[in-house]
Image (cartoon, rainbow, N blue to C red; front, side):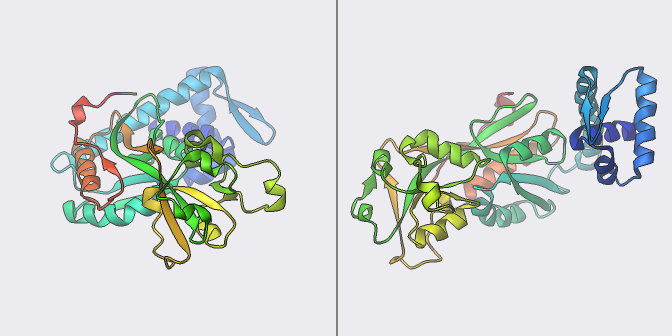
Length: 318
């Protein structure tokens, strides 16, 4: 049994296809297939169920893949300890964030980290929570920034900040006469939301039941209810297609004059989300976690309530 063979079976389990797994591992399909079969013969079990067009895991295969991921992570940890034993802030850091956080936090966070740790280049990714979680578990990312709720075995997290939601309106909208808005006042509005898969869509619906799209509106305005990004939705508000709810860091109307957009806070208790930093229990660079927390606190995010610094050792395992 070799680490290479473990990488191959993990790739097959992830891709559910031998050809795609071989491509991801930069080897030929016969090479990968022979190695997987050799490992199955050595262990005396069938790891994969071969089906037309797709590969599935057997019950024992699921347990083997889980343990293989741990073994590879442990091997990677040995390398990281050797590389960064003298300086944990040297070497690349692979950091991910969800789509509704990254574009508004990274422009502040990246230069701050660059100044605080010039020997730590950043590899940045934006994606859905579910994708970031899997990449974190598999060791493809070192840390991720997501919004609660977020729980996963073997992952720890620390709170970064609470972020209130605000309402974005066309400047001519009648609700702009109010200083604050109650969620129920949006009941008769066309509320523009992100599409399925974005956790912020669920956060808005949970916090503002009146924001749930109304039956019949999608047929009248097929593209007005859902947008692919917060920036797309902002443009839709300017176009007069409706109103929207945004995290406060994303609500700035810098691209438009005040005559086109208006921002209003919710009346208390205002809906909000909690943003956290998450990483694997086995991540061998605790100083990086402390540095990231310090860097976020140094960012000029005036509308959020930042969390106090906490000792890494006191953080709770999920």
